Structure formats: structure tokens, C-alpha cells
Length: 160
Ligand SMILES: Cc1cc2nc3c(=O)[nH]c(=O)nc-3n(C[C@H](O)[C@H](O)[C@H](O)COP(=O)(O)O)c2cc1C
Image (tube, rainbow, N blue to C red; front, side, top):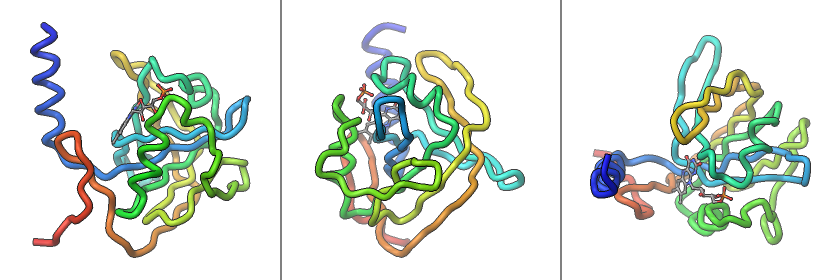
């Protein structure tokens, strides 16, 4: 693939609208968080979900080693949180409110859903790893989702 092809592929993939999550875990050096829209449900029985992490991510080792992680699904009011955890210093929780799960994983308040997971399987795939988690606990509440489409945040998902 040429660089132009890659850009066009990226642009085309961006036509798939998604929600936005922050995936958290407790690493060696403390709590970690990374903005991710690769989250997807996989199976109900057993309850499995997945997300992908880039091999170049500075927190890759923490997620590969983590026995537990949480998927925090952001609300329309949490664009700043998404922005914060899309930075390279996203491991810094300074100024970010959170509670710790019973496994010490950071759980963000104000989200519209949270899935606390035990790492089930990890697959190396291209320039990413696919991380599959078994959902151990979950929670949800009302509220509009933060949406991501064509490289931009969108705040209103009108029901048709
Ligand atoms: C809306 C959005 C979705 C993202 N989804 C992912 C993702 O699914 N997987 C991933 O590895 N990075 C994703 N990123 C990029 C990471 O958040 C970002 O590269 C990372 O936090 C930068 O720090 P790092 O390289 O130190 O990990 C996404 C960024 C944004 C803004």
C-alpha cells in the first residue's frame, strides 16, 4: 500500500461512526488510561468484548500485562476526558476524578456505561494487539454518547 492508499483507507474507515471509550488498567507505575474507539462486543455467552491497542502505544506493556481492565464509555459531556487520554502523557491522572475497582482498576465517573473485565485472550495482529476481555461487572446509565465520525467528535446522535 502506498502512503496515499493508507490515507484513503483511514479516511474510509473514519466513515464508520463509533462511540468513544477510555480503557483503563493498573500498571506497574500506577493507573493507565487510553482513549479508544476500537471497542466492540464479541459474545454474550460467555460475555466477551474486545478492543485494539497500537504496538507503538507507550502504555502497551501495561495493557499486555494487566489481568484486569475497564472500558469506560464516554458521555457527550466528556470530550475533554477523551482528549486528555488521547495524549501521550495519558497515564497521568492528575486532575482526573476516578474510583478504583476491587482490582485497583480506575473507573471514571459520569460515563454512560462501564465494563470491568478480566483479560481473556490477546492476539497480535498487524500493527495492533487485539485484547479480548471477559466482562465481570458492568453498569450503565442514561445520557447521550460521545460520538466519533470522520475524525471529529459529534455530540448528538438523534434517534431516527
Ligand atoms: C477517538 C479516538 C479513538 C482512538 N482509538 C484508539 C484505539 O482504539 N486504539 C489505540 O491504540 N489508540 C487509539 N487512539 C489513539 C490513542 O488514544 C493515542 O494514540 C494514545 O493515547 C497516545 O498515547 P500513547 O502513544 O502513549 O499510547 C484513539 C484516539 C482517539 C482520539
